[in-house]
Length: 239
Ligand code: PGA
Image 1 (cartoon, rainbow, N blue to C red):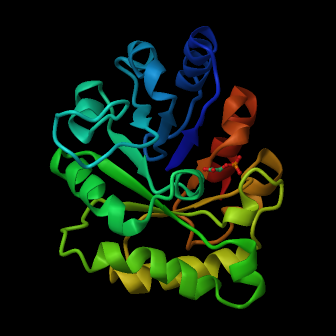
Image 2 (image 1 turned 180 degrees about the horizontal axis):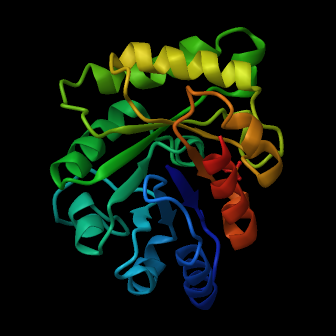
Image 3 (image 1 turned 90 degrees about the horizontal axis):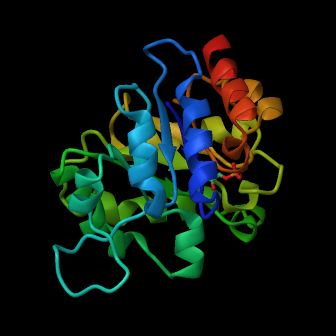
């Protein structure tokens, strides 16, 4: 699965044009492509994707039911808008809005309740990696979710080292392998989908995808360019 995270990018017309280009990427039926546009363009992008196998996703949601939550969107709204995926726990939200896994448990639960797929992001900072605590940090971000007693069937995990996001420096394939293996062992599901995210580009994709531990990618910067995104999808299919 290759998921585009457009973050806070694109005007309405750019979002529509980009979605049209992504829709026309040809790939095997077994290769799932997803687009997570800014929430405000979900409707417009949903129109473009009608009848196509490209999945639509939100970049975030909260776990609360309908109510007085100014500026928030819940999982049911995401479902109603035509989404199948919801990214949760992205490091940019953990850093900027102090989101923690404990806080995100109700959001994960509510996305699962709607029948949608949470794409749960975890990853260590550079300081944590440099001090040899990368695995501890990643496991620490997962544990509160695993201890919450939810049926996590269908959950997708995205391993995204914070220091690799938007920097042009992907993690090495050995480091990705070790981390993905650790994540699968901890969630106790050998078949769990574990994506890698962090500077995946047409140049780095072949190496990242060379590991059988990698189930696909969460792509930020390179997903804003349809040709680059298509090249990443092609790299996936060549591996
Ligand atoms: P990047 O972002 O591909 O620009 O590094 C990935 C992400 O944040 O999901």
